[in-house]
Structures are given as structure tokens and as C-alpha cells.
Image (tube, rainbow, N blue to C red; front, side):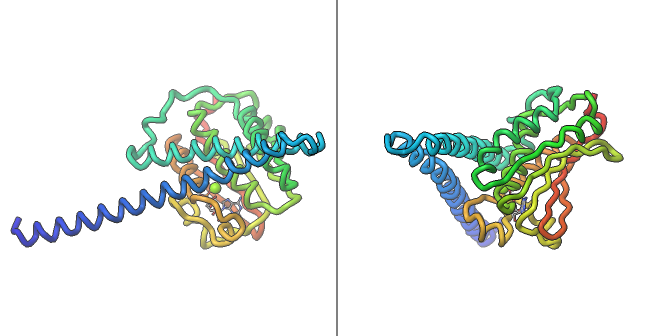
Length: 257
Ligand SMILES: Nc1ncnc2c1ncn2[C@@H]1O[C@H](COP(=O)(O)OP(=O)(O)O)[C@@H](O)[C@H]1O
Ligand SMILES: [Mg+2]
């Protein structure tokens, strides 16, 4: 390599390094910013709980809010951990557990309960239609990496709560398909433009209307869902019509026993 090419190569590498550094510093700022909001909310709730003049009914609501903010925190931290792992290790290997036999209806109910307080605060309801699970799956369990799939479902549920209209319901169903079974989560609120459908699964992408409604966000949620489903040889898809968005997690039939 001539001295001239070597110099150009070094200059290129320096430029690249600068870009990576700036990106990771932006990422850290984003993480810090996102963690601060729920922590502050918890702090203020605790302040109000200490106040003797606050009526007991209001204190119940405050406790509910503490629980809900803590759920958001745990959820965010799990996403950040998965993201940083993906950056260095391209297939989430570090997080791979042995697949477990999971009762997917039970899992859906537990996750819906986790997000119920957050939904309740904005007059939304999360409904798990358990008869659809009985029809599609019966008593079968599904062999999956439970924590990862739980995080995927949570990411979709979190979006559904965040981006849906006040006084609407979020519906979780199971459906039989040609190749297997899908879990669907339907919400009604911010419309997703059909031209945007591909982009929303990309790392870091956020819809314009979503940003306007909820300024805090990372655009990592659906990207992680996609990666987690690929790890299970499944996929994620979206059907959208005006204000209705239906996200589907597709699992292969041979995982159910
Ligand atoms: N239930 C939903 N209703 C409307 N828009 C949604 C919904 N879920 C996801 N989106 C769109 O997909 C984008 C990407 O979602 P996500 O990856 O979770 O990032 P974030 O929630 O941080 O913006 C959102 O910014 C939003 O535009
Ligand atoms: Mg999200």
C-alpha cells in the first residue's frame, strides 16, 4: 500500500470512529433521558404519598401510578440491555436460554396485567380474548424462549397503550394460520401510513405522528420484536386500516405440543 493510500485509509477510519463515538454518545443521552421520566414520576408520587392531607382514594391512584412507572422502567431497561447486546453480538446469543414449554394464554394475561395500570390511567382497557386461545391452541404449550417472547409482546403492548386513543380497548387474540399460530394485538389510535409499514420495524425509526404525541421514544421496540421473532423462525407483521393497527406475531405450528 502506498503512503498516499495509507493516509486516505487512516483519514477514513478516523471519520468512521468519530461517527460511531457521536452515535453512542447520542444513544447514552437517549437512554438517560428515557430513564429519568419514570424515575421522576415515581419520586413525585412518593412525595405525595407522604403528605398527610392527600386523601386515601388519591393515594391508591398514586400507588397504582408508582407500579405502572416501575413497570415502564423495567421494560425500558430490558430493551436497552437487548439492544446493546445486539450491537456487539448479532443474534442475541448471550440472551439465549433453553426454550421452555409456555402456556401462551397465561403469558398474555400476565403481560396484559402488567400494562393494565398504565392503560387505566388513560382510560384504556386491555382485553385478552381467552376463548380465541382455546380455539386456536387448545391445551397445547409452545416451545419458546420465554423472556425474549415476553419482551416482544410487551413492546407491542406498550406501543398499543401509548399510541391508542383514550377510551378504547386493546385486544389480544390467538388465531390459527396455515403455517402455525399467530398472536395478534389490535389497537385503535394514531394511524400508520401503509407506506410506513416497512420502516417501523427498522432500528431507530419512529413515526412522525407518534413523535408528536409521545416525544420520548427510541424506535427500538419493533426492531427488537422482529429480531426476537426471527430467532424463533417466526415473523412479525402488521395489518392497518385507518386508525386500526393489528400487529401479528407468527409462530410455526411445530412449536406447539
Ligand atoms: N399500536 C400502534 N399504533 C400506532 N402506531 C404504532 C403502534 N405501534 C407502533 N407504531 C408506530 O411504529 C413506530 C415504531 O415503534 P417502536 O419501534 O416501538 O418505537 P417507539 O415506540 O419508540 O416510537 C412508532 O414510532 C409508531 O409510529
Ligand atoms: Mg415502542
